[in-house]
Length: 101
Image (cartoon, rainbow, N blue to C red; front, side):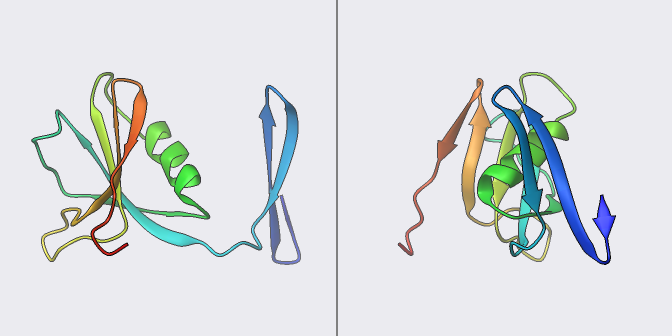
């Protein structure tokens, strides 16, 4: 729903209705759907308010069952994720510690 340039997203969850405003800053994330952890593929750019939102978007774009989803916040010149933030495999997210922290 958009009213005078302001957008609200309404999510229906098991706990009830959640209204999320677009006032939060959007971040750029990149995700790839891979055959396994050792494979690689050019990433797709997505915008999300937070990492959990990026995870939700990436999972909604997953095309094949049993694949690995990799999310990061930067790509190299060839479009591959440089330093993954998290990887989804076997039904769970694994978070990767950054060397910069």
